[in-house]
Amino acid sequence: MRTLLLLALAGLLSAASENDWFVPLGPPPKAAPRHISGGESFPPLPLPATPLRRSERKKDPAPPKLVGKVVWGETATFADSGEIADWNLCPADLQSLLRGAGQALGVRYGSQSVSLATFEADPQTSPLLFVSGTRRLRMDAEQLAKLRLYVQRGGLLVFDSVAGSPWFTDSVRVTLAQLFPDRPLRRLPADHPLLHAAVDVDKAGFGRNPPGALPVFEAIYVGCRVGVLLSPYGLGCGWDGRHVPGLPQAVYYDVETAGKLGVNLVAYALGYAETGLEEAKPELFGAADAAPPSDELVFSQLTHAGHWDVHPGAAAALLRRAAGTLAVRVSLRRQAVDPSKDALTGRTFAWLTGLDDFRFDDAAIANLRRFLASGGTLVVSNGLGLASFDAAARRELARLLPEQALKPIPADHALFSGGALPIGEVHLTPAARLAHPKLAAPLLEGISIGGDLRVIYSPLDLEAGWTGCEHPMMRGYESDTALALGLNVLVYAATH
Image 1 (tube, rainbow, N blue to C red):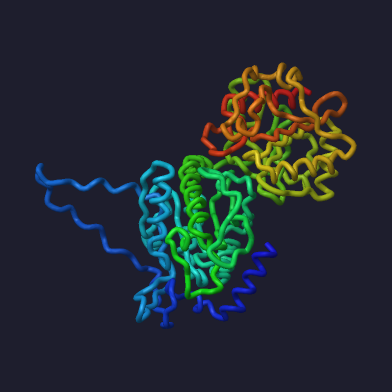
Image 2 (image 1 turned 90 degrees about the horizontal axis):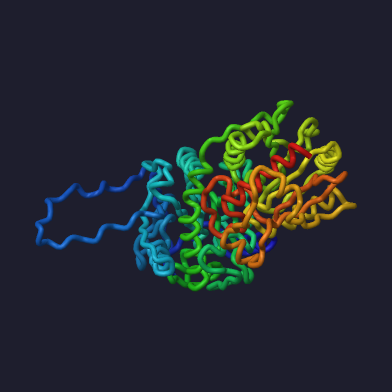
């Protein structure tokens, strides 16, 4: 983040006004901008023509529209370069992106311009919305409300600071903080699926002013997926093959890096589209301060300052299965519990997951220690199997129980043999199998207190498989193994 701030400061010093960034991708004269009305729409599609004769050649059907490019801002006309628009400074960016992705992935998709005046916020019509520019984002409250609803319904909203402009980037950050006040932007970790969905992108090249050697994305998570993606450095310039000679302060990925990131973006949007729709379904939570039923096992999920709600609906899917399988009585709703404020009194089971760094405060540590000492079981699942959460979970468990360490749980432990379903052969997702090619038993670690496991940690995602949705590049268990392990964990927590 320090690099981003320095870059933004340097950009502001070298371009005193946002209008200095509003230029054609070449050295143009300046012109006054013309406002685009917020209610602007597009001409209707042509009416049906006379039917073709049998001998006439028919056109190939148009590919389905994967990406919608959002119209916003103003236009200006330059004597040498013609008209430019805030929303479309790289006119061929999406066509180039989808052409390259089609060749790499063997798919054929198209793009379309989207007027927010008529947009219905339906991810099934455009699974990915793309907003690009160099100046401050200009949208009214109604337009922004549609974008928020679109993300909540399962869509992927992507912002591209097309030339690395601090004006656009900073305005997007401010806007997103207002739209999603409880979901801050987070930098994607190096092992996130979006950076590896089709091709591994571990390093990045830049066309000018390289800020480093790593790709940089900021994201807002919705469930386990990226719902909003911000690229502070230009993607469209690389897709469009532009070199931006008129902006010496511009920062954008080179053609090769932009191409790889673009292919991954398309693959990710396709791979997580179903997950987005599934996790957008409403879920009922029990009140955090309600007393848990005395004769039922309650799925108490711990909240924290990181992204704690990784798989909405997964717990409900497991609990419905448990209600029809187990002799143990379970509540069919999970309860969100803040360990800093809730003493966890009377609870026997607590679930902890996340995608990135988090930290318990002193009050949470004290409450969790009392919970474990009174016979509670803490189960920790590494959401998507990411290294960032793994490091944070191990650090916080060491703070929680400094005199005890996580140890591998042996395959003959009662957790596996005395539960609801036999584990049998362990089935891992492809990414997990690649990381652990010789794994034959569940990869679980634990801490025992008084002879019973009180902490169970899964370095692989234990929860994603409960819903049955695909999670590309997720390091975790396939559905059958995930369900068996989940049910066995519930039984163990209720009986030990």
